[in-house]
Amino acid sequence: MIMFEKRKCKYCGNDELKSDDTGGMIYCTKCGAILEENEIDMQAEWRSFSSEQQSSRTRTGAPITFTKHDKGISTEIGKGNAEMYKLTSKKRNQYYRLRKWNKRIMNSKERNLNYSLAELERQVSYLMLPKAIHEEVARLYEKAVKKGVVRGRSIESIITALIYAVARGYGVPRTISELSAASGIEKREIGRAYRYISRQLDLKILPATSKQYIPRFVSLLGLDGKVEAKAKEIVETTKNSKIISGKGPTGVAAAAIYIAAVLESKKQTQRDIADIVGVTEVTIRNRYKDLVKSLGIEEQLEKISTEEEVQVETDGTQKKRRRKKIISKFKSSQLKSPTDFSSDE
Image 1 (cartoon, helix red, strand yellow):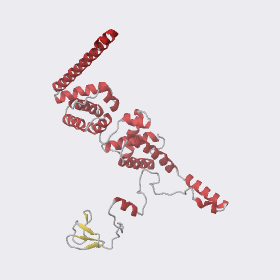
Image 2 (tube, one colour):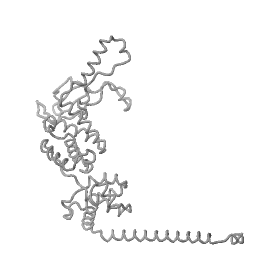
Image 3 (spheres, one colour):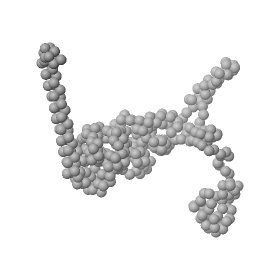
Image 4 (cartoon, one colour):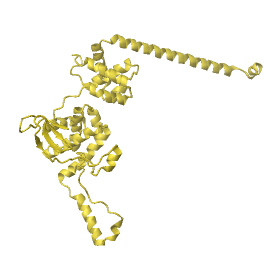
């Protein structure tokens, strides 16, 4: 049964309508009037009991997708088969000419999309983005091509700007540094293209939060889920603090991960985090001070750092003593004369 809330019954005005799939009709739940009948059943006439059985019984092709310049529904003349030799030379030449012109007949929009969507697929694969973002970026780019806003501008910069906007809207943002590395375009050019395309397509996307960056950064650093959960908790606790208000989300996320790693005894160096996140060590240190001050855990972190330093010093001393003992044994064995060994035996 499917409920129809927007439509109303023309007899009693009731807006609760239902469809009967077995009878092929739509009726009112209040007065019982049949509003439509003999509806066409769009479902398959066969049953399937597994995904493999369903795919084997399907008679349609691939679904329509915006990631292909022709939506994935056009066809082209193939290379032929082994029975081509049965044709005369004139027919074979005609076949090859048709095949060649079939590839050449393409307007400027299709040529643009053919190249642009290949570049989009490359960047999406590099940035490891989900298929939903791939489809949405392709749809927006085709919309931009139809409006003529891409003409005269770099295709790569427009695609990169759309990836930046859509990924942020889906809650899996990518930094400008990552996008610059994926596309080979300068950060300033990506920013200009983003501002331009957002005005032209009327894109209204909220800024990315620090919490959205944490899962990707934690994954790239090879840390576990405890560090991720702790970092999210730190960001959530301090999100309304005036100390970090207006600060860059990537810097705050990096500092939160650093603090969480220290608290969970999975300490990472600031340099390693800075290299992954794409910010400087100075930024991490500044945001670290702000977060620690906002959370009020200066003494706790200082105690953990002191214990770690003592442990490192103790381990280092033990290793040095052990090394000295080994060296002294080696020297004493070298000083022994052959007669000493014979006497010991």
